Length: 338
Ligand SMILES: NC(=O)c1ccc[n+]([C@@H]2O[C@H](COP(=O)([O-])OP(=O)(O)OC[C@H]3O[C@@H](n4cnc5c(N)ncnc54)[C@H](OP(=O)(O)O)[C@@H]3O)[C@@H](O)[C@H]2O)c1
Image (cartoon, rainbow, N blue to C red; front, side, top):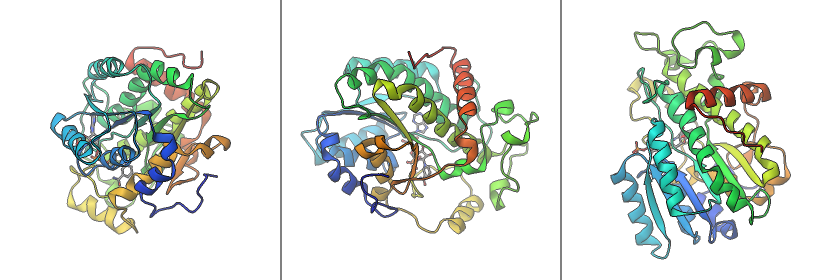
């Protein structure tokens, strides 16, 4: 259980930050995917309210990160805020960003892999990986591993489990496992255990003329976020570092900027409650801050509490397989257990 079983769907992130103020004060925290109106913006503003030592905002559009950094500085002038440019769809950019972070700090207490992307047509990262899998999983995989020395440094002095890596997943993961035999969605045959749920509801089944199913690609990437969390948890627990994945809820942000009206209408039919931006950061903040999480063997949270992901997203063998595939796709091995 979490330390606050009364927290739920409508708990504001600002309240969570207040309750766990001791876990924020003086800490160095990096959040990816920060732009106005995003979950990342609400997350960093709530963190800023409780005097962190250093907040690093890492995202791909300078003007948008700067707008949020300026809001923080206006509201909380005592907080040190730094911005780092990173395109998670470019491994070169990620490697540069990791070096930029290392130039700002020698330790990182909390890493929140929040950035995410939805695309509705076939696109690829700079390395030719399907855009949603590449940006939502492979990019954060590389960034996290490159930042691990800073997290390890923080873990030397933090209480066990207080150094954390939080990965933003989604309830959407339920629609598709990782398609190991066809992770680029090129129409290669996949065994049933790698295939998406059938039938996909309504407009979720839509595909582009070349057969690309955007929702399946997004769902695959969000399953990967949970499997990645399982590997991190397993390998890093003995090193004092904990990792949790979250579904933040449904929040009107710019995530759906590319979606057409038909798909947006489908979402609005399905979703019973749209969280405010403040409520949209609460589950992330519980995952990043609640000391009670370390006492339980959970790894996925929704509405501020532990919940069970789909079977395909908690399979230890799939987590190992994903780790190996991710290493291949970034061209580097990371022996994080050692
Ligand atoms: N909103 C929801 O209902 C919902 C539900 C479930 C899960 N989520 C997850 O929550 C996370 C945050 O999403 P959001 O709703 O806040 O979406 P959002 O408003 O679109 O924010 C996404 C953030 O990620 C950044 N980003 C996108 N592509 C990037 C790249 N290649 N490199 C670096 N940064 C990149 C965006 O930067 P720019 O603004 O500069 O493009 C933006 O700051 C995502 O992981 C998403 O999957 C959201």
